Amino acid sequence: MEKRQFRFKKQLFTINGTYNIPGFVICSGFGYAFRTFCCKKCGELFVVDLEGLYHSKSSLTSVFDNKSCPKCNTSLKENLVPYPEHIFYNDALLNNTERIEPECPDDTEILEVYLLE
Ligand SMILES: [Zn+2]
Image (cartoon, rainbow, N blue to C red; front, side, top):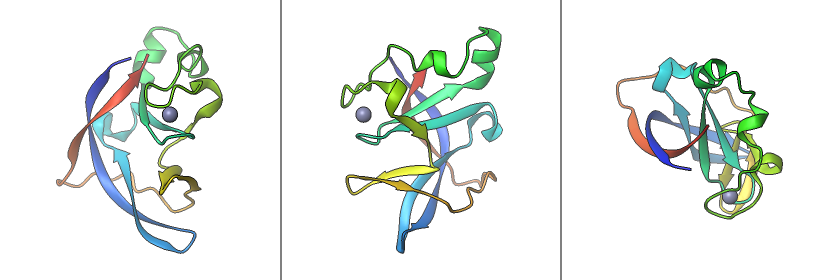
């Protein structure tokens, strides 16, 4: 599994009364062509290319199969959750119910994230 560069914007969330928890919202593909997930155990981020899935006729679950997290080695199939709907922060997985703003401002940043394919 390799890391690729994607464009993200940083959004600060308030979760369970804690302010300014940073989350990254993907802006590559105008925010629609990619979905982001994180590992429940360690918080490592992953990107799935939805358009690539469509063209290779794969399903979302098939890209999780038989793969393990490069950081903590847990099985991805049971341990991936949508991100930033879930954020790993201070060694805990938080359930983020705040609105995720899809709009991308000018001040985005490039992050290297594992691409699942
Ligand atoms: Zn992990």
